[in-house]
Image (cartoon, one colour):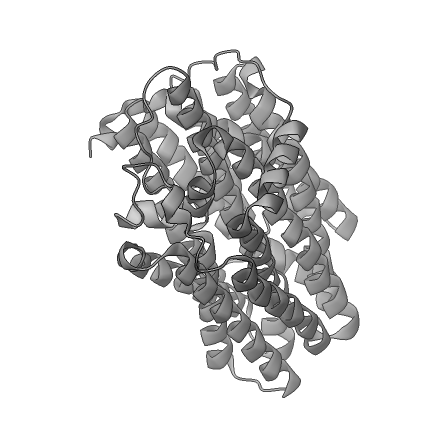
Length: 456
């Protein structure tokens, strides 16, 4: 409650939550819009839109993170929210598929600039370290709850209205977010000497390739992307064309995946108190492989069983949470404090690269070769990642051994799902600057990893 007593943080958090739920509604609506325009080729349309999104995040987000201190941040964030509101408002009026691609390109460019800028503001608003940890945790609670509640809200709304009206709700959400941001006292960033975004990513990738636990994280990124792409890209066509479901059924199926994520988030704090991150993440990989194989078997046998599909989607959502949740702690524990921002920047790029590989497979291959072939390819990729991870990350190497004194894992619901557990007190001066840069990078990574499972 002390955190929410901070006026400016309270308004920023409200802006984030409202925009998040609007984005969740638009994700459902975009899938239905693609189906309305392209029918059986909706998966290919979504895959292309998501590929555009990943390119925008890989290119724009690191640049925004590196150079945002040269801009008035409150005005910049407000303008980006207004741009997003106007773009989403235009989506119901598109009549051609190429128009979706153009609008999504503009929308995701704005979102890719908004996310790192927003995350960089939080340390300046919430100066106390304990409160900042809670702020990151609260953001991740919002992301987790949204993954379940937005599809549920969309399903209820679709029972009484057209999916196009969901875009109106999203636009209003961005508009309210802009008003809240504009009413917040956001100090401009202090000028600093940056290494280039490319230098940070390259330096971080070198660290990844030299560190066994981080090489395993790269493999696990592939598992998450292979399984997650099935849910994000293929749900609309699978529910409408194979299961014979309605528009609301599409939203309910997405809610099943969100339920899995939420359930995993609820149980992970106590698990991480007792079990090493390695065991949790490798278990998540096994869960995802099983989920993909069940989906594949269902498609190959032409089983029309919506309850089984819902359970499979729930399983995939839970497996993704088991891997993504402890990732930040593994990154922090695998390197020295001054290298933390670089490894988060590298993980940002590497995780999005995995989605760049799997999104086109899920959409384009499914459109031309069917679900069985597509999910076979994705199952193979998931199995490769799940097999490589334990081979790369041996039991002898424990990330927790490198965590500075005072850092613990899974101490609360928020720290678990926010991958923010254990931000240690690293002193004043240069150490504080390192901590701030690392925490901002971690918040940006967590937010963008969560956004990977949204089409918008």
